[in-house]
Length: 290
Image (tube, rainbow, N blue to C red; front, side, top):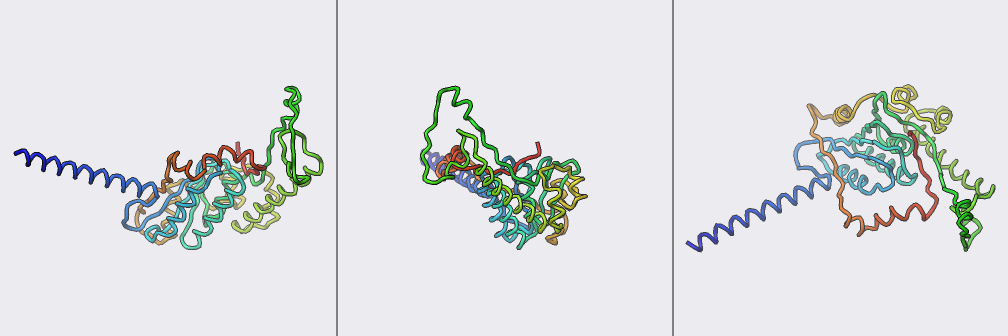
């Protein structure tokens, strides 16, 4: 009798461990953006907030690009922009994916500056009539603490190995020569943005340059200017992507979910980078809209 009870408890325990292991595997699969294996589907990747750390989104896009059952990709963007390098990295990744599968971009309520640059990587861009987008430009903002430091009686000591090593300093006003050098960098980045809009949207570069002064547009204005293709929400973007991929009927949708966790970010140095990155170098930002 006692052995029977022990056997029963062992079976219950083994079954419980099996359920825990299964739940863990399914959870891990979902975090990786894998979804459950099955029929052909449309993958959805979300880009929200300031675009500065893009490792998760790139991993998801690469995952969707490799998987055969993912026939098309929709990128949902809700962002005021972000750093130049991060925006360009996502833009290039979307272009890579679009060479193998249809990529449709869905703009939410706000997709300006660097966020619009990312959208250019897709084959089609959908937005709502009231979506705020555009703001084609680049911005560099640096606080000048010189007056405050003088009031506090603090005099910074700066040692440098080159004349322009402290080109962007928080402690003093830049010289006319330094402003000229910074403006040249901003102008070059701005030209890259303009060329990307011209090439990806099939617009004359001069036409783009006339509207690329940082102004924002509604979705309706953007469509009239050729900056987007059509109106529609996320569901409509999924339908368009499915049609481009040749899928019939309501498509299965798989949402990519980035892995979370402070430990993982600490191990990869990503939390430290976020805390210190602002102080390490000039922060060129494509941001705007509000």
